[in-house]
Length: 326
Image (cartoon, rainbow, N blue to C red; front, side, top):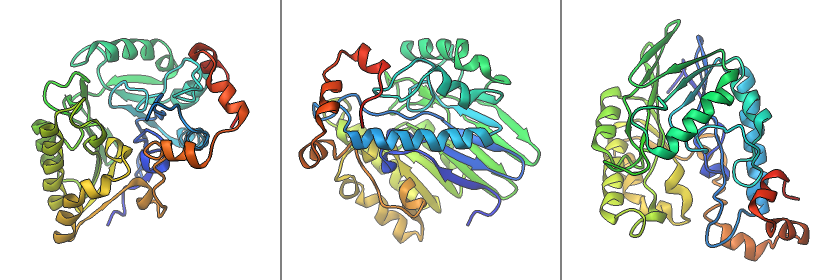
């Protein structure tokens, strides 16, 4: 389907971590989208399993390798699974100042405005990024609502859209569309379906052949997010499945084991339209590896060793500075 724009997922829930990091390449430019990766600090009352740490190590290696090739790095918003912070943290983000420098050094960074359409926590993180990892960049460019030209390739960013439903307390994100001649790949992280009507209209307006999108967070339904918002995100995703030839569906949606059953109407809509919906792992020809969703089972089936358990009982401040024995 796509010949001029190459897409390579690097980290994702289906690959064992929290991320949507993707490498996109055309004959004109190589773009590293949202170069962050994280693990949930607690799920089912448990910290990450050693297998999750093995997965984040592999993800970090893939991101570092492609960062060497990239001309451009994007930041859609300032959650740590979408950009890499410069502080040392081996608990959730598997990062250090050196990790961030290797990703952002000598790159053109196209980033969400850290001062406007942003909530308080992300404003702080954005300010810190500009002062730390961002200082290594060749250039920082605010991307909100702008289009950048690289030869014949266009990289077009949306105005900020909500991270989930309208007026979400989680703030705003940017979508990005890479266009070359008659081909379009669109990256829509953390829109959660999308739940937001503006985000849905933005995608319809772009008409991508490939859409990389974060689905609704089923695991938060009914207590963190109203069920009607989850349902809205799901129904909007059905509309997209009828319209977009190929959807790479990822992120919050895959944090529960029965997500396919809950999202079966999306797959059915795609099938009836002659379209495809796949995970990042499936796009790569691999099997899904939903480690966070299976964390409780992993602790039961593969109990961590004594050294790991001893490390896990240290104070958080101590664990952040010492890699776990995996």
